[in-house]
Image: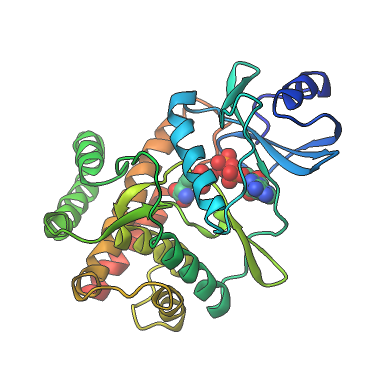
Length: 305
Ligand SMILES: Nc1ncnc2c1ncn2[C@@H]1O[C@H](COP(=O)(O)OP(=O)(O)O)[C@@H](O)[C@H]1O
Ligand SMILES: N[C@@H](CCOP(=O)(O)O)C(=O)O
């Protein structure tokens, strides 16, 4: 289920006019989304994605859209953001925050060394960007993890609680280090990267973006694309060499990379536990398996010793 809020042409047409677009030619709901309502719009001035944000207020969406706009302006493979005639990146439609971005061709990639290298290069480029916009604080970092750990320690069976504690102890030293920071995507799973004719066309879904350690973003993406494969596995090497062509990891980052991958798996284990709990209240929410991330965390811990 992905069109949570159905819209009609009669609702969209006047809203589009306020975005400076005069004619709606066609609209279709997009089935692939999990959180927001997305429509693909064909207009007299090209193809667009209309998103109704279902899970957060406009004030939380605006910094993300300003970041996307700045990245697109800097030439990164990020959808362009259409501002309203008033200059706003977020407006209101059907009582929800609404955004309009350029629709790019492509689909989720097959995972191979080439797609991994391109994704790595994108992240390396992203982490080099100096943008004149207000920072978004890191959203799923140590403070958030500590909070969710405290919550889930009360609710999970003891073997899982033990695993949480062991994992937390292993990654604690990471957060004492001052690792290089940058603008990060924070959720670069393969379903957030569109490829057309074998080339990365765009990176979408920037709602978890923040100013955070570069290594955090890289670890999230490596786990998402390569699972618990070892650091010397060709797929992981492909991501790292694509990244390295844009930005060299420091010695401290190289040393911290294995533990950062464990921190990333813990983050998605916790957020998927939260999402699964929420899904019990609503059949419309798509649930991704918390066990998958917990198992990845176990595998990474065995791998790293
Ligand atoms: N800029 C875009 N260009 C083309 N397709 C897009 C674009 N943005 C989103 N989509 C399509 O919409 C789907 C859902 O978008 P996504 O942002 O992942 O929604 P959700 O956050 O609800 O999961 C994507 O899988 C993709 O098919
Ligand atoms: N990538 C996250 C879930 C975030 O959902 P998205 O549809 O907004 O990308 C996960 O795998 O848990």
